Length: 103
Image (cartoon, rainbow, N blue to C red; front, side, top):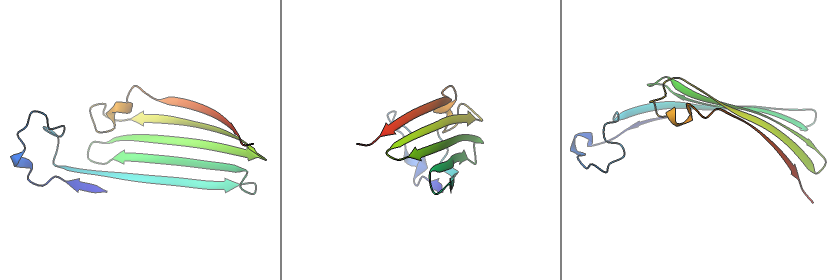
């Protein structure tokens, strides 16, 4: 995906959140997914890459379902320039575990 901000020269408000940023931005988003063992195990990787800035976010996850229960593990991994559009994740890499039961 790419965006280009029209009339970029005319923005002069101090309250504009995009003031000082590039008028053009491009990014790539991808999701890879695979189900195994009759859909009991699902592996997934979500990737965000800001092409112009070079920063990225990778979110791998695995979910295992058995009956009415599901166990999910995921993580968020940031790389690149902390001042880029994805820089809000620079110091926020994480690991998450969740258990779900439906009744």
